[in-house]
Image (cartoon, rainbow, N blue to C red; front, side, top):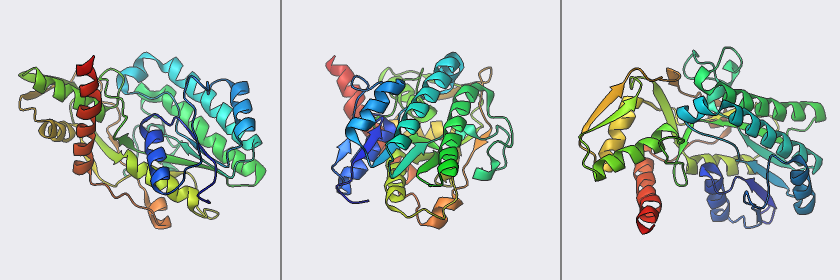
Length: 318
């Protein structure tokens, strides 16, 4: 991939998309095609077709989609499946017709069965039922993954690369406790509890489920690695993980310490836990030559600092 290659990043302002933009620019790629929601509605098939014909990207990173935590998934399942299916269908079809050289598609660890051997290898997909609280989202992502593999199979060209990152965190995450994922939501909960001198924070579930977390900059590094690599003999899809997981209780304690919250942490066991464990087996991509490089504790400190400098400071000015 030449440094002057045209690269379209769909969802460039989001958590993963913004990290990909940073990584590409840091690596010397400046011919980036970026379009915000006001410029391009990705669920509009005709608009996406016109956009691809006009811009002719050589490479595509599809990081756009409807995402959210357990509350959002339970409340808006129709929106999750409808929006993601529409975006994926529009972009993948337009990319195929535009004859792009390579496309990276982001699937989700939510696709794996709720009860799954750990760590979860790519071969375990479709071997059982996903976690019910995120089923609509999981089905939409399974469909997108299969669309990538189907295009590759039918047209005999391995251009569409589906990757499965585990819980991703970092700058530009959603820190809203109602819509964000667990790590970013807890950062805000504990920060606000510290600022208000709250004596306790009550969290959903038992705290026993285990989760693996990967920094967005590591995900972006994997994207650039795959865009530049000859992957003709690489099995697809590809898990992206660190190989280390924590219980939600351990995560909460780490975040509380990072934030400086010293009050009590209580658990509301009447609320759902989600899947008992989600640890990815990332052997495929590691054997191919890539591995993550950001220590979790350091990544957490950087993420909290970004939250304070960007979200909290903006709120204080308004």
